Image 1 (cartoon, rainbow, N blue to C red):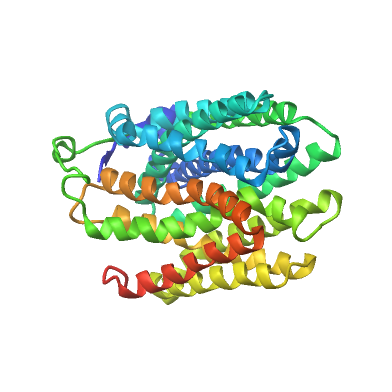
Image 2 (image 1 turned 180 degrees about the vertical axis):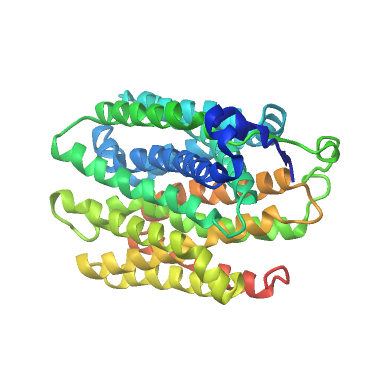
Length: 407
């Protein structure tokens, strides 16, 4: 676990407050540090939800079929795969604080490029860059979440992921507003970029400065040469959860438009109810784990994910599908916070490396799941593709029940 340089607290606190007594100001200041970390998670989630909210429109503008959209969506995981081999090293060398700032800025800037796409290859390049900087942002900001957790006695890491989910809900509302005023994706994405810049300018100085321990800097551990099986299975579990989450982001609007036949702006209801449920579940995650234990919560969450997806397939109507997507949202809400926390406390692998491994594997599920849906839907139907992904929830429950690391 990297050492936190607590001197950054004094650098940001006004000197007058320090002279009056650091202890009196420490609690309120730590809340500000927590808020800054939460807002970086929020900004990261807002970028992705902004893109996701306009997928149906971009699909129509470029006249893409399900398979063509699925092909375009593959550019996201390809971008992440390109960045994956050296993301951890860059974050370790330059610090998660610096990479969080630069990564979030470039992640948001890519939205403008995507909004300008008038040809399929434009969209492919935009999504490739979007996935590339997404990986840097994801690793660095999650590392900030782990370091911020060290400053508090109670569990708070679930609330950070809750902020990411809350951003998805906010992004959906902004998307609905933009659709109401008939703004183009480019206009919408430009506004979103401006909002992210405001978050950066008002919060970057509150991020934690962390220095790697000497033994971690000298560590020659390589997952590819000597893979830790526990981290591998944690990544697979999270892969299943984030694949289920990813299809809700990218395909919920399409599902409500083409299968549920929701009229007009009501196509965003599935996505919105999913995000409300997931955000609420993540803010409750710390409480549930403290009361029932991570193992029970994960097993039940997996079953809830499958139940929600199969309900959407069997009852493709407005109200039942809203309830179904809410179940999926609550089910996936607990997977990421619990898995990341377990991975961060791995005793055999340095925390930064462990987090990079699990995050990279799991986020591939978030990015690969949506294009997989497109190909399955093209061969069969969109309902059948949702049923296939529904198996992932059962996998989560089975794998968690068999791993000894969970208590």
